[in-house]
Image (cartoon, rainbow, N blue to C red; front, side, top):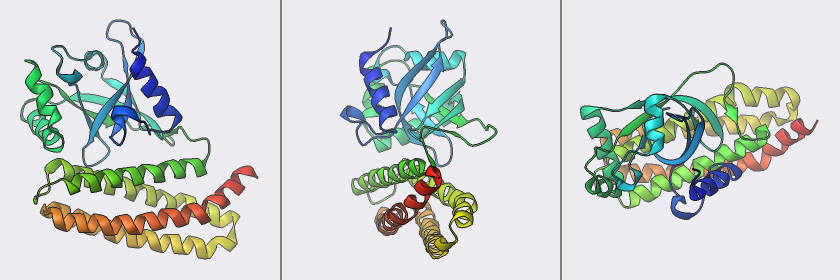
Length: 280
């Protein structure tokens, strides 16, 4: 039977490319579509997630500490191939429940970032599962919810801004030693930003240059800013490995200021060119 609350969240998530209000506002949320264990029909559920340092993410089958596993977990046990929606991209993934010490370490990371997970575990006798969602490689570009390239860039930029704000908030309440999950959050952000800028450098900017030769100074400036941001990202990766929160916080503040200025400039000057190309 459909859950009215979940359905409202799903509709809001899709309408606003991953941004939702209510209890999920400001958190990390994805839409997970599984295949019904008995019905064989698709079922979509909003699920909070934990970054895992790269392409994969972790989801936790807490069900608020209920005595039984949530339906989506039972579904993926029967059908491990799932679909993940991020707000911008939709992709297939392989769901792998973690076991033993690997599960315990991942759950400890979750508790470190939010003690509420421990409260859920204390409410139930079952061991709350942790599941890794590993993207499955497909041919061609990923499926996007954006209607145009310029919209896709805007959505991606908004996602980077939201994630940086989350990381800054998490660091503000972190102790002197950087937690393991917070390190994973930083590394995942660095990985995603690197991929985004690499795609712009290798594909987007040459395409714009071919259509708009007069944009060469703009593209050169954006490329130089990418290099500066890459330096800041490399520095953040290094200090995150050291585990000192105040040092990492300072690097995140510098990266935030530089990146936000870059995103604002790109949106002001590059997006109109893309819109003109799309309208032609």
